[in-house]
Length: 318
Image (cartoon, rainbow, N blue to C red; front, side, top):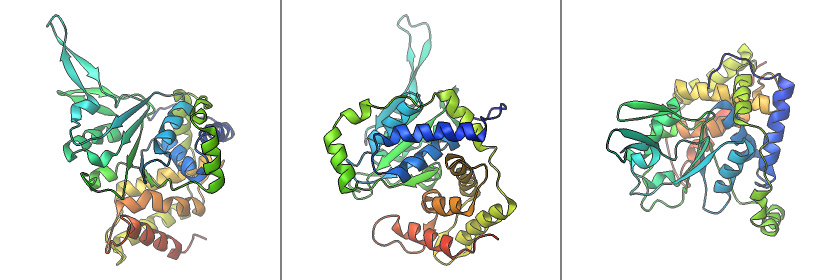
């Protein structure tokens, strides 16, 4: 996604991002924080893991986001019998038998919904690793570039472990943020019931794929003061030394938080990062990258709690 041309001026970038988030919020009601962080992930070139019970709007969010950026959308239903080739694509023999031709799989889209990703076997899950990290897939030794922009929104149900395969750390580390939709409040749920299926039909593209790429370049222009960098690095260091963690954040995780903070600043119409950006993003960006010493109750809750406590214990810069 790296291109030499600079991104749009900050004011223009903020206007585009406001329009994008507004279109998604027309459909995904009452989840402004989730929508904001999904927009952050898209412009930062990252991927999103959505953990929640079925039926709270995860698929609707992914489809609406794809429509709003004017991009293509594909849904992959992960099951135990899904094969890697069902995701990446395969080489097929031409009808005349003269040569093989690559038939792209559903991974070739701007927004890919990997639905119930933890129901597939580890071998199939691993088919996403190269795509999410390198923006390409390799089939029979030949690499094929994926469309740009490219974002994976994966879902998994944390309460149902029958017939599932937990995501390995290497897979989790590819997700920029892990989010939870949660149930809507009463009034927003009333609006959803009244609107029915007409909600998604009301969405129009807020911008195009090329504009998303230009916004990604604008993220690179957001300033990060050295004191903010020290604040971030101290947080990362403490996850590696604090007794509440068995394993802390990797350098890849630190880089993810750094870029996500720049993207959030841009979404919030700033050309610089502030400490509040780190406080907003610490849990969604870091909690799935650490291993807490004790894991009780809801899966992942101990990690979220430990990162949240560590963030608020850390003195802000200045």
